[in-house]
Each structure stands twice: as C-alpha cells, then as structure tokens.
Length: 295
Image (tube, rainbow, N blue to C red):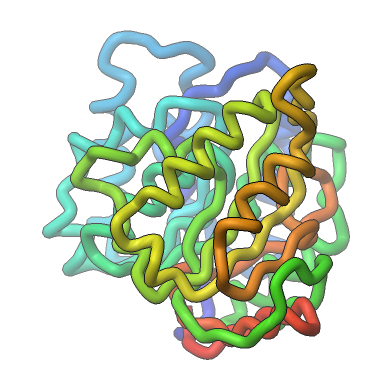
C-alpha cells in the first residue's frame, strides 16, 4: 500500500463519557505525522444517542469514501452504537472506493462489517480520543501508527504461549463485545482461515465466557488458524464463575490451534497498533506476529 497522506476524521460511535477530549492536540499530532486532515461535521458530535445520529454519521462516513483526496478514515472516539450505523452504509460504493478504517474498541463493529462486505483491510488500536486520553500519546502507539501510515509491514513479539505451533491466516478481531454483537447479522465476517485477535474491557468474567463460547459455536470457528488474546482491562472476576484468567484457560482447553495470551493489545495506554484483514505468519512458540501482506 502507498503511504497514507490524507485522513478523514469520522465518529461511528456514541461517546459514553464526558471526559475531556484534548481535541487541541489531534490535528497538530496528525500533521506532525505528515498527514493532511479533513473533518466530518459529526466527528466530535454525539455524547448521547440523539434522533437521527446513525443516519447523520453514516452520511459523513460515505462522504469521506466519496472524497478522492482521502486515503484513510480515522475514528475520533469510541464508546457504543457503531452497530446502528451499518444499515445506512452503501457497501457497494465502499467496495469501489477502498480506504482503511483506523479505529478501536466499539469501532470494531463497523471495521468488521466493512471487511465482511468488501474484504477491505483496516487498522485497530488507534483513535484520537483514546490516544490522547492521558494528555500525551504513548510512545508505542505513536511509533506503530507512524510506521503503518508510511506503509511499512509490521512485526510484533509479545505475550505468553498457551498452545504452541505456527500458522498463517488473515488477522481479524478485536473487541469481543462488538464481535458478539454482529452475530446473526449480515455483517459478521467469515472467520475461516483467520487468526483472531481478542480483547475487551469492563466486562464480567462470565459474560466473557459466554461470548467466547458463542464464538466457538460459530460454524467457521473450526477452520480458525490461531488465536491471540490481548489484555482484558478492568474486567471483573465473578465471585462464583471464576476469574478472567480461568475463563480464558477453560476456552483454550477446548481449542487445538496455536494460542498466545497477554499480547500487548487492549484498553491500556501502552498497546500495539495493528493492520487487520491482511495475512500474517503467527509463531505461537515465540509469540511472534509478522505481517505478510500490505494494508
């Protein structure tokens, strides 16, 4: 992929808090990366689900796809509600004007939906509000983001081996709750031959267990090539159903593919940013992910 030169700022999600956005840092940072920036009208709009928000956000997103100067779409924030935008997107048009969506967390719903309908790659682990939530961007997030927009193929070594082995497949994921939300919809991607990246935040351990079981029941799960568990931020160990660690261990005991846990990805200030929807080589013995295809 050629390097990204111009980004359009979108916001498919509704924010769930009124914490400061540090918006004054967003454009200077993107410009320091050599990027030109185009803002959608609803980029920072929507701290609640106002009437018509999904249609408005979808229109802004489609306008970004229609703008020939824009190379990629960057989400301003996460939260909830990206799922509501999907029915208003024109996937045929998106397929003819491919651009990666750079987002994270709740943005997973739209990223995977676009992938399911068009096979367009995307980038996870970065949106503007989260990148600057602590005032300044984390050096690891910054370094990964700058490499990706320059078109570099990425390599990551992190985590702890659960099941050894080596596999190749398309990396898909990441936030488990939005993945689960897509079940039963026409927007769920085919996970055959995929390496799955999974994390979540602020969930009860038993709910994580149910969502992982639901994932395992997917008809195409038996064709999954490998699994990378990120870190689960602020998730709650249920007093009778056990810890998050136990839930993941129980899931892994029923799955015979290469698996790594505690990979440095999730809802923490320091985490990797990853191209998704492209092929990787996954060496679980050495906790290594190596990108094989361009974004």
